[in-house]
Image 1 (tube, rainbow, N blue to C red):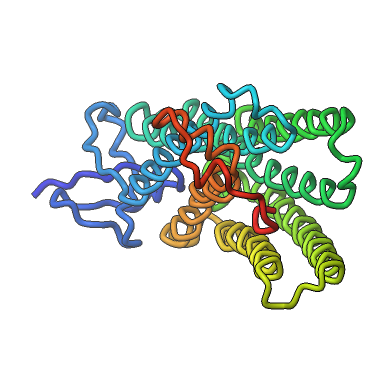
Image 2: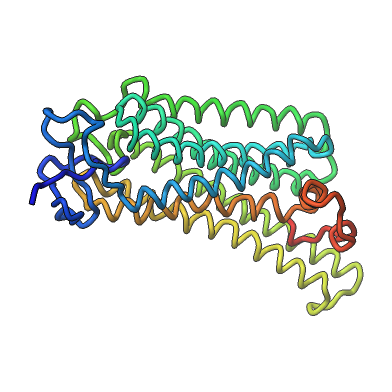
Length: 341
């Protein structure tokens, strides 16, 4: 029986010694990774074996793109959603939308074009988009903290100017990070310098991982301060109205603090495994570990619209209007509670 090579994984380094049989068997590492056949065959003549993990990433990208496109469309078409808070939510949705499209384009280019140039462009798009997503989460956290700390004066023209400044900075920095692979900062010329995600170098991904840890630490500190402010306000209101611990206000305040914990916990659960693994591993590690940590990281972009957009009362109203042309009474008259923080 003749032997045929598996297609190189779209994210990982090719193993120059990995071959699979024509019956579809996997290479030694169990992921179906291989390399291209001898140069006598053109890329269009090579048998195509698709890595199942790349299919999972492409599927995640499709879901991310569709979900966040809905949020971007609603915010863009609704003139009432122009407050700084909605601009930041829109920035997050746009970043996640581009990340989803980047995952789909990378899958398509890797298995159809098989071009290094296309790979650099799509990886750059993914890096820039996910960076903008994380930076947007930090901007939302800063906005929520300032809106509580300066509750009486935060809604002013200065707030809008500050929001636009944050947006320009976060997208500018994200674009610079995304352009690194295209400008030559990649490992295509020297495979030994590759990280767990090709074509990013070990140094590149180390900088991204350390930056993420610093941003996570800052977000954790801000959310702790938000929790303190919310609990202090709730305690003051309870004293003024002689509320007991079992009253609905106390319950909703605890729910709001729990919501903040869920937001931060979800963010850490999605991104922390890949961040830590990227710091300690290199391209010689089994590909399964990379995919097992990279896929959950993409799920954060699936969860973001649920946490930051679909739970918002104004966005809910806009969604109902888009979907059915009416707003249910339960949504129209729902009062904002501390759990909406």
